[in-house]
Amino acid sequence: MMQLRLRILDQDPVVAPRPAQAAPGRAWLAYGFRPFFLAGSGAAAGLMLLWLWLLAGRGIVPSLDPIQWHAHEMLFGFGGAVVAGFLLTAVPNWTGLPTPKDAPLGALLAVWLLGRLGSWWGGAGALLDLLFLPALGFSLAGPLWRAGQLRNLIFLPVLGLLWLANVLFWSGSQQRPLALSLAVYGMLLLIALVGGRVIPFFTERALDGHQPLRLGWLEVLCLAGLVLSVLVENLPGISGFSKLAVLGPTAFFHCVRLLGWGSWRIVRVPLLWVLYLGYAFLPLGLLLRGLAWSGWGSLSAATHALTAGCIALMCLGMMARVALGHTGRELKPARVTVVSFGLLAAAAVCRSLLPFGWPQLYSHALWCSGILWCLAFLLHFTAYWPVLTRPRVDGKPG
Image 1 (cartoon, rainbow, N blue to C red):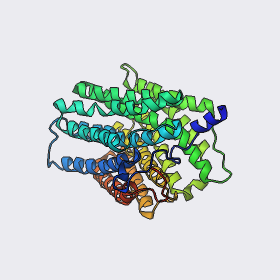
Image 2 (cartoon, rainbow, N blue to C red):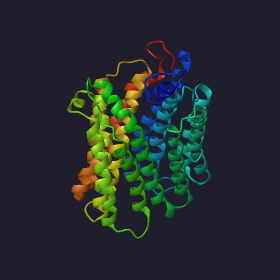
Image 3 (cartoon, rainbow, N blue to C red):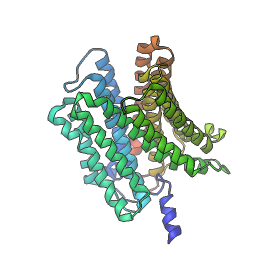
Image 4 (cartoon, rainbow, N blue to C red):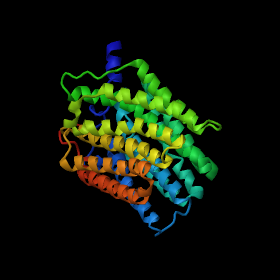
C-alpha cells in the first residue's frame, strides 16, 4: 500500500489522463489544461498588444495607471490562467480524483474572463477579479484533501498568497508595489515547487542513463531563500547590501539546483531546454535585483528577468509539453513551437539584460521585447489551437 501511494505522489503530472472521454464538440472543456492554456496564450499576446497600444499613447485604462494594469494582468491574467491549467491537470494525476470539466470548467473560465474585464474597468469590477483564485483553490482543495496528500496541499497556501497579493493590489495605490512583489514571489514559489518535481523527472525520462541530482537540504535552502528574499525586499529599513546578501546566495542555491538536474544533452530536446532556460532566469533575476538594490543597474529590468524570463518561459514550456502529452501526441514539438521558444527567450533578454546593462537602450529594448513576445505567443496559440480543441489523437479520455 505504501509503495502504491509513493508511486501516485511521484507521477509525471502530464502523462496519465483521468476524466471521461469528451464529445468532439466540447473537447476543449474535457480537461483543465485545454481552455486555460488557450486563454493563457491568447491573453499573453492580446494583453501585450493592448499594452503596446497604450504605450503608443492611443488609449487609457479606466481603472489604473497603465504600468500597474500591465503588471497586474501579466501576473494574474496570463500567469493565473497557466497556473490554473497546470494545477487542474496535475491534481487528478496526483490524487486519482477529478477536477472540474465540461460546464463547471467553463464556469471557472468565465470567472477568469470576468476578472479581466473587472481589472480593466476597476471599481466594483475589481471584485470579479478577486473571485478567480478562491474558486480555483476550492476546485483543487476537495481532491487534495480527500486524497490525504499533505505534500501536495502546499499549493493551496501559495495560491492563498497570490490571492492576498491581489487583495492588497485592489485595496489602494499605496499597497500596489508590495502586492506586485508578493505576486511575483508567489509565482516563483510555484515554479520552484513544480520545477523541482517535473524538470528532473522529465530529464530522467528523456536522457537515457542520466540521474538528476536531488538533495533534500538544497531543496530546503532554495525554497527558504525565496521566502527570505520576499521578506528582505519588502520590510522597511533593510539596506541594499543586506538585500544582496540574501538574494545573492539564494540565486546561487537555485543555480546549483539547476546544474545538478541537467546535462549538456538537453540541447537536443527543445521541451527540456526551454524549461532549463526559463528556470535559469530565476537565479539570474534574483542576482540582478540584489545588484539593483545595491545601486548597480535597473530594478525594473531585473524584475523582468524574473517575469518575462523565468515565469513566461516556464509557462510557455509547460503549456507546450502538457498539451502534447495529454492529447496523446509524441513529445516532439513542431518547428514553429521551437521558434516560439527562441522568440520568447529573445524577448526576455531584450526586456531585462539590455536595459540593465545599457539603460540608454531602454525604449528600443521595450518595444523590441513586446513585439517578440507577441510573435512568440501568437505562434504558440495558432499551433496549439487544434491540439487543444480536438479530442485526443489516441482515442483515450481527456
